[in-house]
Image 1 (spheres, one colour):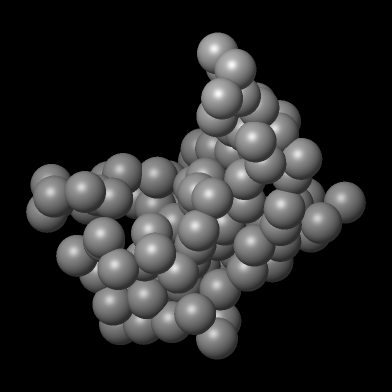
Image 2 (cartoon, helix red, strand yellow; image 1 turned 30 degrees about the horizontal axis):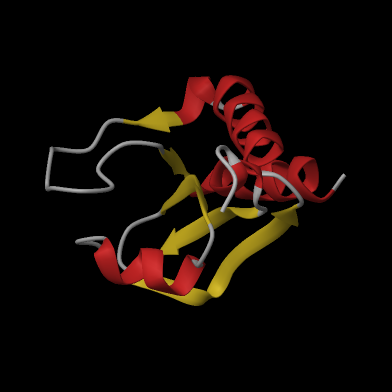
Length: 102
């Protein structure tokens, strides 16, 4: 595999809905379902969303824009292992979904 090939493969930007709290997580993954299994949170995939981007670079740019635009509603969670950051109040999810699919 050529140098840099992995970083140029596509990836999803996801909005993962917490099943028990009014929160959702914004992140990037090549395999979203596999990513949810690594999180200590109970994720409701039926209320989650994802969008595919042809390069990881593009996906990370979109993720950064979403984080910046929604920063006022970011929720700091206690460190509980992997995935404790990048959570937002669910009231911002419709806006995040609109921006993600625009």
